[in-house]
View 1 (cartoon, rainbow, N blue to C red):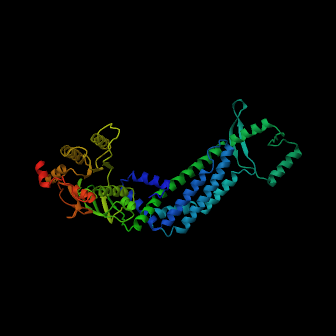
View 2: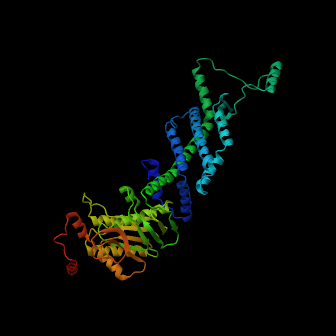
View 3: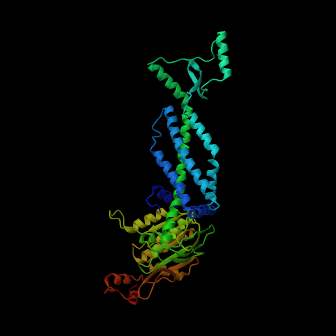
Length: 480
């Protein structure tokens, strides 16, 4: 999704891991994304302007200077750079605002054209010219306690040539011999102390101006950072969409539902798997409306974990306003998506694998609220069948009673069979499809859990024949 662009990776991680829970907010972001997908060139051009501006900003040593006059000088240079970026943004808005679909993206372009109009840019240029103080710096002050100067104010610069009235007044005063209203003192040559004193007076007079210029530069920096961050998400989505379309894989805008108990999909697939192998992968249909527990069983290597991952990814993508890798997708909003997948054994032997599983699950439970979703992948498989089934039954029962939706991929046949025999309302069962010759179709079909995961198929595919010590299924039932 990021194509090596750090800002896109950061935006994707930030938004995917902070899902929206307001259907209106999701719909707004979907509308912006739809417009960006229709005109990817516009979104990318805006993103490049923001990125180019921030890169130029890095090369300017803003923040290293402390003197007010230096801050003003550096600020003028920065403002000139931002002024050029404003001009580029305005040009993009003028060229494409009428070509973009109505909605948030067009509103943004309209805002750029309205706020960055010619009068604004002309006023900005006038302020930047004034800040160069080509006519000198006029500072006023008054005497305070102990005759110390206080109340420094930067005045408007004087005109280079006084007007006729001013010249006449000065001539008249010179004839009458009256004292001038303004006294002038010129520093003698090589008066270092005087230069230092004058520099200090100038710095005090420019302090408030330097503060204002610094605040303006920081605000503009924040604007371009936010602009790049917002556009990075959409540009990343554009890149992902183009790659999936290039593989012939379908995508759709999902339908978020605020009411609980809605979960359905058509042609849902794992986008990360498709991108990894560079080809379109098998999609699955899902009809789990009204279900708070979905149990997936079936043959080893049948695509159960991939299916679970596709469901989780689709939920996250939907709730951050993205398209979903499916032909159709609709689901209730979740207050939080949690995963509990198996991990490798702790080689340091600080704890057993079951202890580690239970510890992680305990941490997850403390963060769950009603309406959350938990994806369990072969949890509790690190212990024996009976103990694992008991643990799974207790955990699933407690979570569903607390309003948590659970999707459980498992090989615990006792646990799955007991759930199936209980005919509990709100439970759905899927099974990884396996053909009679052992071929995996990687499709999940509705069906009762089997008592075997058909591991012998994988053994035969690897070693060329079934294991000689395999126990027949009928004999295995007797041993149980």
